[in-house]
Amino acid sequence: MNYLEQFKYVMCSVISGMLSLFFPIRDFMYAMLVVFGINYIFGLVAGLKHGEEWNFKKSMVFFYHCCLFFVMSASIFITGYFLHAGEETLGVVKALCGVAIWFYSTNIVRNWRMMLIEDTTMWKVAGFVYYVLTLKAIDKVPFLSEYLKTSHVDINDNKPKFD
Image (cartoon, rainbow, N blue to C red; front, side, top):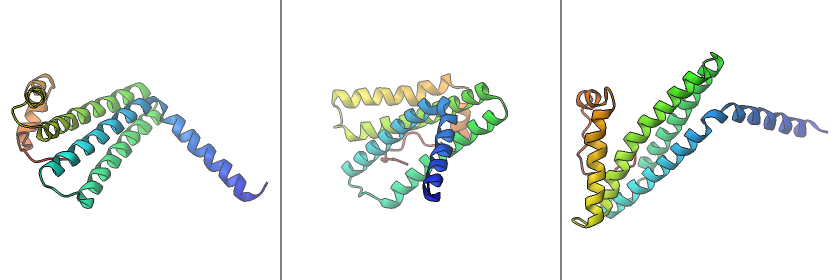
């Protein structure tokens, strides 16, 4: 066996070992891939419907943010794993994914509503879902309403977004 084949086997073993380490957060990462993908598609379609052209830089910023999220989640999990606090760290990653899902789902619903024809039944359904997500869900999550007030986040702007 030559050195190149040995190197290939070593690399496959190392990568397999690292992937097995992330097995407990695998489902969270799959869910976030779905949310990020839907957010990108809905933002792209809403933008095209309103006359925006596809922008490579804007797309790359979105993918950069997605990569940062995955690296941050994996880093948090690895740190907790090596500190022998696996269950607590799994809870932190779960909470982080929950917060990200809420923010991205409000963006998805806003873009969904922008894609629809105004005053149709589906437009009203999307408007109601957006209302529930932005106004009623804020009251249920501790500290979220204070954060949105202090960070100057405008939840009512009507621009298509996929970043």
